Length: 396
Image 1 (cartoon, rainbow, N blue to C red):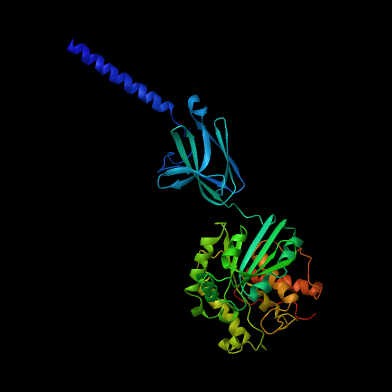
Image 2: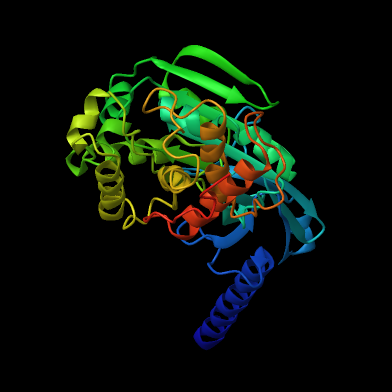
């Protein structure tokens, strides 16, 4: 009798274990071909591009499918909680039979919970930027001063003349702003910027804005920063402010895949009376070389600065042409037409990498020869940004 009871008990336990295992296998949601295990600690790993739709196949029993739902979730200390409709979403999510369709709508890291009752899996979805197509969209924000204003004045017209479909430009402008002044502004939460924005070939200006306002006004592709002109060739003026500004930009931009560029500005005209020209012995080439050396020392080695916009080299190249030292309006700002045009053409070429050879837009003080020598100077500056390339246009 005791043997019979032991046998029956053993069978009962075995059948129970087998039954539980069967239920366990039954009550599972599984994605094939993904890294991770779908758990809270080790979610499935998914990477998609913004605007891309990706279909992921999964398996689940019919009982689970009947009540299955998928939603974007927030990672909290008590688990993954469903985002409310009022929360910003980074994904569009559709369940189609045993396929989960995800579309990336906002850059960054997002979580998806696929659940049926108490059974669920977690997916960690990285929405990334693919190769930027600047023929489709060009979104540029400058954090600068009047020299960034000089550089961007004709950028919209040039981009549209090339054929770029959508152009959005912004300039967070403080007169004479240095790297240190930008840091002081956001440290004190000061609303002391002029924000100029161009979405339809017209610069619209608003006063009294905080730096963070401009950073978050659009999902910018490009952020351009610079040093104030008088200190641009003085290495000791850059730190710790450069690091602090870049950290602030990264912490506040909507597009985590935005590229940061450095605007390398120009040396003053030899006749300039600017008070900072004394730092360079009132000599244009001394100032140009100091700017180049500083950028090579402090900017080029950085992995968090994507590229250089060599406006200063373009201007210096043009000064070797028959135009000579005539590109400044007051000895330091660029002449409002052909000088600013040359800088904007440099911005377009440096940022997009697109050819400028077929661009026909020019300012009304430029003839075909001046347009040609400007293009030559820009192309040479992009190819050799840290040295002067003599113009072939010595006489008109």
